[in-house]
Length: 192
Ligand SMILES: Cc1cc2nc3c(=O)[nH]c(=O)nc-3n(C[C@H](O)[C@H](O)[C@H](O)COP(=O)(O)O)c2cc1C
Image 1 (cartoon, rainbow, N blue to C red):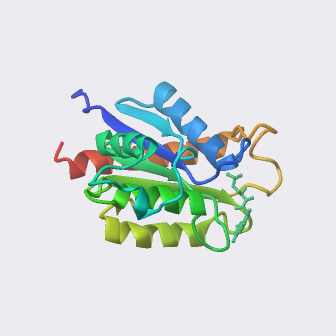
Image 2: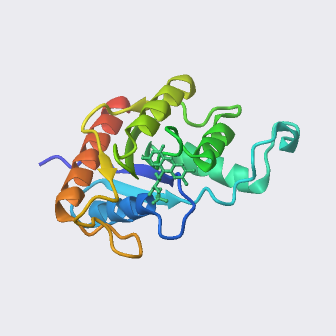
């Protein structure tokens, strides 16, 4: 069987909370990529060191060191996996801040494939996902449409342990399907 080219995925979490369920989804995605898939390398990128966007911090086309480091990680990735909570029907401020920094010229999101997963209350973050997809239009990200992944993190039985680790096997399987779709679409976009 022909081996697939390796893809590098940058994983971003919209929550800065220590026991974040969304970061738990990303830890699970990393584990799945290492144990149940081939050809996908996922790196978690911490957005918490980024300063609040202020274009006064840009000096002759250069950015603060934390921003430069973040932009480089995005540039080097083949695709992006977002885990986005929903705050007031939208994406969180830290995630929007990270998105905006990497959109400054040259826009390093351009032409990459992306997928969204979310854990939130009742609808599992569907409204935040819609907003993220809309932002993606302007910054030239190409989201997979399906499978969709929305998780009500507060439903019983619990899906996470007290540290925010995903424990539900059926949900892990859904997450794996998202990763497989992202892998296929990333390779297609890159013509591989
Ligand atoms: C400011 C704020 C606004 C929120 N608004 C929503 C909302 O509109 N819809 C929703 O489903 N959950 C909402 N939540 C709940 C979070 O999505 C939920 O706590 C989620 O678990 C946060 O993600 P995390 O576990 O990764 O930190 C809100 C939480 C905060 C702090």
